[in-house]
Image 1 (cartoon, rainbow, N blue to C red):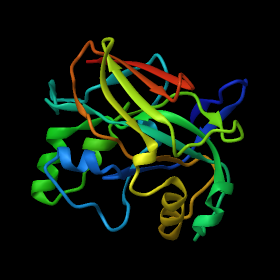
Image 2 (cartoon, rainbow, N blue to C red):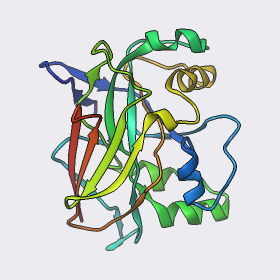
Image 3 (cartoon, rainbow, N blue to C red):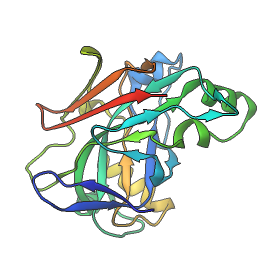
Length: 227
């Protein structure tokens, strides 16, 4: 089933295609997991577009055989880049032409499931791609004179600030990410790139209300953690 995201300031919608996600793109986030070295190239993984939910919707923790499959659900607040046209092997200095707009999103992660998969050498798909694991705000068009490499990211849970960072601290900037991803995949109109999270990730529980803010109230995203 197609997934659509509202375009801010209009009645139009952005149809989501592929979702590329970047890991380890902020050094302080790497350090908070006990590592010290930055990757030499971007770490890329995927979510299905069925992971998308919008403002006002609920994050649902997966249940199998009557029990939650995770006891440690984490938030990761991120700038999201929406791709506006198709391309392959895009030079970094041309990458900006492929950007349709920006959003703020949450890369929800079943941390215990991910950790177990890492130990066993198995994929992270269930931990990162479960239904409702990619809450995202409306998309603001890139022609709004926004500097995406100097935007604050903030997350409050139940009114208490839990995460705060700035996109200027990315290890790999947006244009470099687009160039790298397009060297491996054929990027398409409708693709999203979750660009990585700053430090301060942590756990949520049922009933928590999450409020993510991009810039100076440029975009807002409010979701709840449900059963």
